[in-house]
Image (cartoon, rainbow, N blue to C red):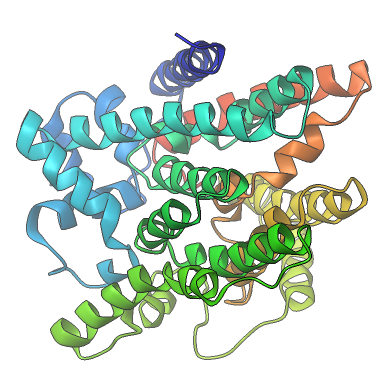
Length: 377
């Protein structure tokens, strides 16, 4: 077994043990807060909360759609690839939660393996190890091992970039289709692909061939396929966006809200939300995670992180904020991997130790809250 596989598997084991410990602590010291629908009619049927609580909030919708299809209101916001894979997995193991969790664990192991190989193209083993460690210990990394799309999306994203970096353009384009079938921000792989093609050919004093430009657009087919399905079934190809405002997270899809306006809203919430309310913690988490990654991506330019990585990540960061809220941003930033590369490049030992301590403490807190029904992301 190669060093990348061994390293990845151990990192996943560490994360699973930490999050399971946090969930046990939460189960013993936090009252369950039924703040999302169908937990009693869907999740409780799967037995003990230490098992089904990893499918809280959006996880419930993934399970329901994988069983009955897009027959429930608002579920069209969830792109289909993870749902289809969960449905296939459930057919094999006869349990949807096991299927979803197995997929997430496997894809996260795969993500770390590909991330390791991708990082070693440019960075030392020490930077590689630190980068992956910060990703694994990030306060919301428990989503990678939950019934969510984070691990699948990260795997496809890193795999597409790895194929680009090794000049396997056709494979990169095909993976891109799966990427846009998983989440909307997968579409930003297209400009990143175009940049990589241009950079590759510019080094040879050549113009990119037309076939490469066509391949760069291939990932769009995943999004178009889902839009076609929504048009046929619901007569609205943009239904995945139109339903967002009905989720109750303060999203606005009928107009664009600029990021400075969103920060102003959050600044007011810092002074108005009741500090004894767990929501106050989430407000700070949403604000600081967003500000941190804005800073990290800017720092990425100064640190000369590969431009194509930033071309994907910057619009990937900005797009959710255009709906007028930073809700879910602590989870969304998980796949903005250049931010973790920047952290991995920090050489000061005391900063490295401080990051590990802060991340681990927050990871335990966030996991305990999430598994007991409190909104995190």
